[in-house]
Image (cartoon, rainbow, N blue to C red; front, side, top):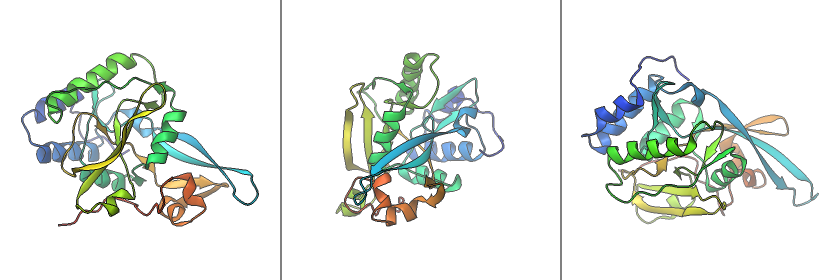
Length: 248
């Protein structure tokens, strides 16, 4: 985490952006995050174990990914708030912090490993407004209370998926997840939204860009490029989406 150069609270962030459009809100959010204005718990990444079975030997092989314990937030330890972002900003932040965005499989694995699993809280009015984003954060916190640790079930994840390349329409965002307490996601993989659309339900989870396999650190792109190892990170056919890129 960068040295903190801003102390804007989560409450004041939402007051500041309340009348801004999505571009302005994203710009302020990225500036604050790059200024280290995040609660200290986001500096801690949680280890998540993933198992696959070797198709030849039948043995179980383990890998470990390291994930942020919550979605991207802005503010101090005393006053912070989760902030939905466009995939453009999410990718920019992931690049800066040597991370990548999750796949569908990673989202599922995080949910299985989470110590704090909350029921999704759908909202229906003014879904893409800053006020609704702020209200949703407060509702999650009211539900979470004092529980700490790797959290899941509170947002749909912005993900990497083959469907981004397969979509005939350019510049899409892919979302998935929002698991219910029975472990089933509300949101299947969906690429119908244009990339500038973001609403209260979207969240950005960072994944450290190196995976620990057999005591070796391997860059996630190399893992995805390996037909055997990619099963640790991806359960799609090609697994060839490494990051968001946007066409003009």
